[in-house]
Length: 94
Image (cartoon, helix red, strand yellow):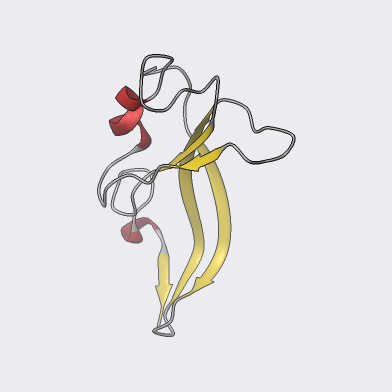
């Protein structure tokens, strides 16, 4: 499945943390595979490791893989230290 589609961006806006710090205008890159069922009961969120991107786990996706997009709607966000989302790309207010 590698290279099938590019990532999408979720614009979360300002995100307050428990510490009181705020990520300003935070954006999160993610990729989806498959189709969400009408009952919305086939979603799998497959997070990446801390510094990974969704392409790092694409080997799991396929009709012969662990995550079959014909059966599941798979959402894979990039890790918070990946090139597509990083604290260095986000303003932080304490």
